[in-house]
Image: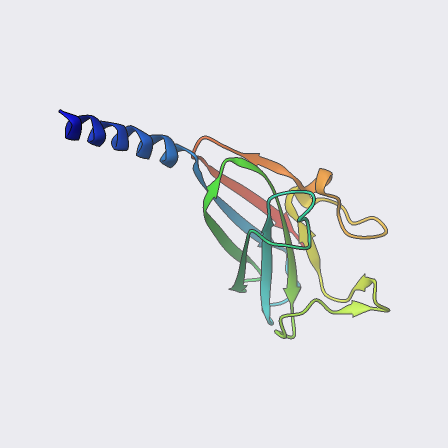
Length: 138
């Protein structure tokens, strides 16, 4: 009987944990060219925004579009930042140290006004094991 209770408990615990896992699909559109790659970072808090990624990905460009999938994302609030790395060097080019020299974009098409987009403008919530689709235009 003890073994049966243990199996039932593990089964229901697995269902609960599975329900808290989400997938985020991101499509970046309106890229200037198919040159280089697009880099994307998924961030899980305002404190980590643009500093420490929860997940990151690099994707080739096809037909001036790039599609990413972030899997196994727990329920929570997130934001995404991307840039078109046209020269494929893994770094965002900066002009005079503060202005991006390559196209950038963030979730919710959060605007960059005199600096990077804010967490408040870029954040979105994921929960209940759903697929969240984000469309970002460069």
